[in-house]
Length: 447
Image (cartoon, rainbow, N blue to C red; front, top):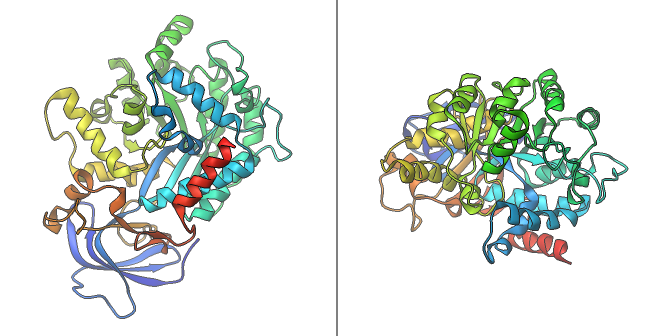
């Protein structure tokens, strides 16, 4: 993945607190060796990135196969629970080969949107009916290879999914998700190995999908490996109600009782929380991954992101079901959702929203040194056009505000991962015809 030494000249660079014009970035061994400001013209031999260059974006929550649901689930009405039946039908048709083809195209779509690392919340482990493949991690390995083929980093969040509800066995659809118990899940996960572009993490699908007496097994597996641990948390009020009925506490309280919360843990959605839940999450340093475009698409509700951050929970962002793949829209939506809830403006600065979309997202996925343009950081960069119909007009010094509140994924001109150009002038350098690859992969699942 790492490119040969080179220099990039950034017409405008977001340096965390301000936009700096004329910045030369020297790259060696996939990291930034030096950042030279006050460089009004490109040095000889430098690759020129015109527009506004940001640190690479992190998509901290992805279900790659959900991309096949785009538009098809917009027909008619319903709830999260009716949407889930359509999702299960798509999952039933996945094989290692078709999943690789789909994920490769989806990850290429992410690269075109400026994403340099993805957190894949992966739970489709076995063949339909629950029979393991000859390689018990064939599905996970397909995702790791797909990320390599698309030129981006991946944290494979291998997910424990053991029951259909509190005390209930998996449904027919869910059999291919389940390893039987947490010990078997841990044994299978232990066969996975990280690579230069890949980290291996863990996930608890939800408190309804992992029995309470097995939560600690998953948490311990992640703790022993210093690996990230993610969990869907309080996405639906029905889950909260069932948890209280069975355990006499909220899902967040149940996770705290079993040692799941902590600085390497990220709760995904964290939508329907009590004041005590918010204090538990923030006080433990547990992160929060908000997925606003999916949360609104599924009519989940608006999570208390501001209150969680105020209590100490770092925020990250994900595109989850890929109703759209646009981390700038996720950042914008988090602020605008809070405006709708509070009827006041300005809950996060553009700088804070970009940090959630980059540095804090990478940290939630276990990647160090990504999310800043400074010496020693990994050379992951994304450049936005400042002359499109969306971004033209504002002065470059307001580039962060333009990026968050006006730009879209369509404005990404370049994406650089570990010093290597993965997207150049709006075209993917490794996956030709990404729209065609997406169309073919989705069609293969409908055949």
